[in-house]
Image (cartoon, rainbow, N blue to C red; front, side):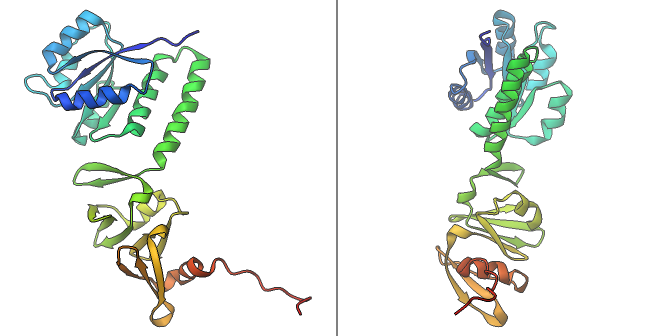
Length: 264
């Protein structure tokens, strides 16, 4: 059986935000955007007229906010709702009103894909074959999303590709994430972010420092068996004694076991 199209409306008082979301949804053939609204009153009229299956709904809008709009919707049929907002403090309330998902601006294609896949799964739950296919897709999407590193900066969630990060250093209870000429301050521990970094790309060289292996240009001996790593932008990073062996492997590779017998 051919999967049905999900008729969708976008409700946001900012036209650029509606345009961006509409363009991102074009990657999903089953999501058909049938209308847009810039305020709550217009959105209610759209729901009454078109009976959409899905609504992407901004939380903060003048006169009638997203939650007020939900309270004013006709009892049936109620579209599936994905809230969209720049403020994560509304997340709990969003799920209290049975939202399917909650997108925190700025979001990317990977995060939107998770939301859309959840919508599709909810819409097609009665079809076992479709549900299994969607579960497989959701797994693939999550795997793709896991290739990104998400850090929280000033209440925002910043999505970074691993190769964008040059190095990370601890600064008190914060982390300074060096991304090119920018430095992002994140309130989390070094161990928590290290768990989310791909070990093939990043190396802990000090209790307070992680570096991107691809950014290392030179390694020089330092005092007491430690080293100085010089990154491609000229940054000098001193390694710690505890991480000496891991740093040595950068230049020499893992030590091979000594051969016994038969040597010339």
